[in-house]
Amino acid sequence: MTELGSLHSHHPYNLTLVKIFWVGEMIKVAIIGAENVGKSTLMNALLGRKVSETQPIPGTTKGVIRRAFGTVKIPKTIKNPLGGADELVLIDTAGLYDPQHELRGKVLSEEKFKELLKEIVSADIVIHMIDAQYGLHRGMEKLHHLLKFRYDKPIIVVVNKIDLVPREKVEELREVIKKRLEQEPILLSLVTYEGFNELLERLAYYAQYARRS
Image (cartoon, rainbow, N blue to C red; front, top):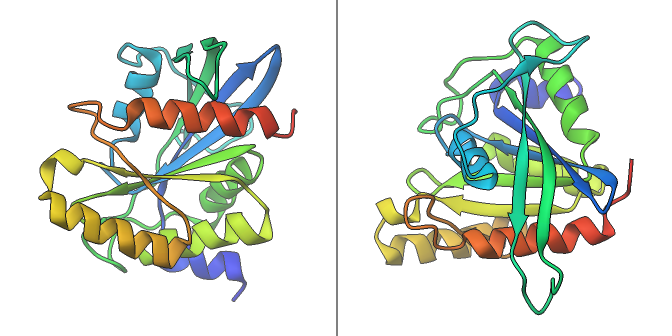
């Protein structure tokens, strides 16, 4: 079985894609993570509204990928003095696994998995969302390393729902992620918005160096 096939067999996932028009050039950002990790909530937060306008993407399996349109506001900071508001095209997909179990969950077909993987690989930036309640899923860890080392994708790691977990547990998870993924995660709550500006700043930073498409 191929490396991609192995990932598909046991670790399906859900994916969201965002296309940011940065200084007139389109940059695509893929948001990946487990069921109920908060991808839709993050999309709403980025757009400043509830996402409602969607449409299927031509050439993909019915119901797998949808688009929504809006803008995201980037804050003015020392690293990003201009700030600004940029157009987004958000692409949300079906296909979920149970974050509470490593192997059990809804399995994507090979065709759907390849469609989703193709979309991720075409992205300039990846946001990997992790649920603070359940930690880092082994399948997502494999996918993370595949994207990082085989496809050379810049990845922003976000631990969401930190408001639902004791702080000491959040810090323990932070150390686990630093060891297993070899990078510092952003600690995020989409209830209190702790860490949200840091996410926007990191997104703005990577967007400067993304390969334009």
